[in-house]
Length: 101
Length: 485
Image (cartoon, rainbow over all chains, first blue to last red; front, side, top):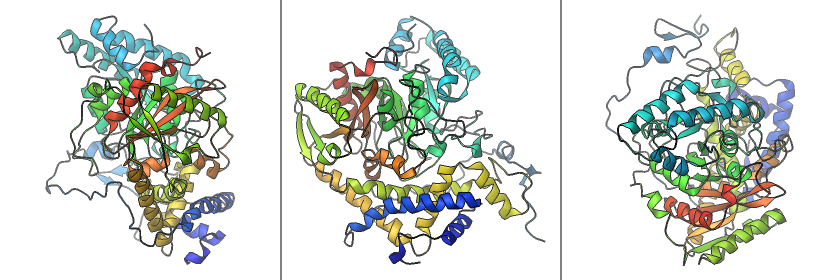
């Protein structure tokens, strides 16, 4: 996958991306995704026309970096309240389908 | 009592004892009850909480308290966590999510004594420009029910425009406050990135997201911003800067103000009748002593391209937290952990959210990171430098907020790119982190037109001042649906 095929995204790429994003797409959704992502990439690729070889990337509008704080506990204990939001929880644990055989 | 008034007028009326906060709150709740079904502006209405807050405010006032926002109602966009109240972000994913804490914005406005009427509709996870991507259905524009209210803060805008609340909180990542303000005839301000805490504001694109307000006037916005702005240690990108007196700054005359007009915002694509209204508004500023200067933002046409890499990339990372395990939607009978993740996310997210997650995942994937993500960040710097150069010559930048007035429901929702181009004048402001505002500046065929005002970083006081002086000289901001000729 290189810069030369920026404009072309294939059906198999859609499957790979959907897996990376942990999404299940139906066949119809995959086709829709291929079409819409192709047109979005067409829009995005307009920026390839501008020369940015001497430009530094800008990640934060004011180039601020993350502030450090003292390593102390500030959170209150909300264990029961938070577990009550879980789709499935038991004895203080979040439950998921069996992972280890 | 007059429900079409803004919060400054309500504040004065409450101070004079013309009515109590409980009476006013009941009147708004009745208005919501009568009109919300047609507009779909609120996702959740919280009458009990509202009346309890209103009673508390009346009690504080009876004891002699006079804080300006004490007992004044408002609505919160359903992106702000409200403890004990469903906070859905207009997504099926969070339809069952009762926030376990308050957003800093909510906490600050609660402390100021405000009354929360409910939570407003929006595009799902704030992704959209028409409020059509909500899990709870589209919102209608109070000026014309066949039209969209704009998005993503469409519910907040429709609620204020239809007098279902006097003001509402909102958020803006690419235009989500300013475009609905323009479409619904309101004053909307997106402050500088970092000016208002993002703690408890559900994340879409963290380097762009900023909280703000939709109000009836610049004076209303100044009162709210005064209470909302300021450093928050809980938000690592919050700006540690003093908050000026926004209300005091409103009165400054505009003589000598230099207004920059980006030639790129008055070019092909701008509706001719919208342009006429904008030019007429600019003439008002000239009559107030301002001078108009042409400026150029030569890279602004690239801002949409850069935004649709950066925002989806950040969204794809932010939305990875919705996994069906700790909170939110979980699919029925998962076969294994991967099936749980995939089906919970596929069933919990709507089409536009999935689309942006896919685009973002692609842009960040091996082999494309430099060509898309780093390239977009480089373009972001070029866009920002355009503004830096322009602000060497002028104090504020003005132009249309949107290329045209509100469009019909369904007319752009089939084609994402057409929808994305809707934000052509607003997105660059988010990339540069600057404060931006939209104020009512006339009508075209019965639909409101918005004038965008952009300022230097952390110069919200100047934006509010400029908008207020215009509102002293015009009455566009006082028009409400049904009364406009």
